[in-house]
Amino acid sequence: MATRIRASCEECGDVELHVDDVRVRVCIDDDAGSYVFRCPSCAMSVVKDAEPRVVELLVASGVELTAWSIPSELFEPHGGPAFTHDDLLDFHELLEGDDWQRELLDPAPGGSTTEAG
Image 1 (tube, rainbow, N blue to C red):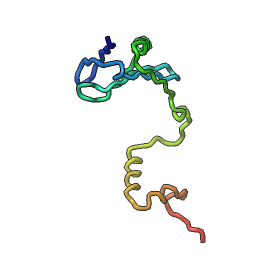
Image 2 (cartoon, rainbow, N blue to C red):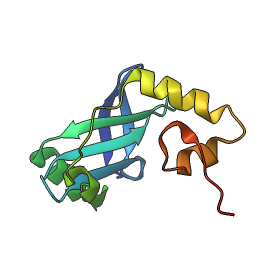
Image 3 (cartoon, rainbow, N blue to C red):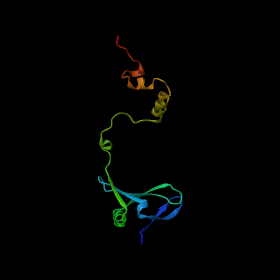
Image 4 (tube, rainbow, N blue to C red):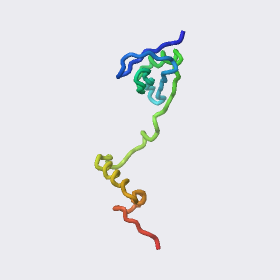
């Protein structure tokens, strides 16, 4: 008899899944676990946090385990002011122009370029 897993979808409530319908993920940096499945009723992807005991039970039932690491970029120091909503709007406006690439690459403030002659 195939193992059935009962999980909960926010839209559909309790659903029954096969072992192959579920994936377990564990972060090797902090041991945080989660499981993910696509709801068989509404087809939405569902992600749930999982305590170590739940991870053990799912893996023991045959659910595939994926280990992952926190990207090292998250540990890098970041300087400068925070990116604001106005910055995002300015960037969007810049991308609407034809010469946005030149303006982004130009080290001079104000986007003026100097051509060597």
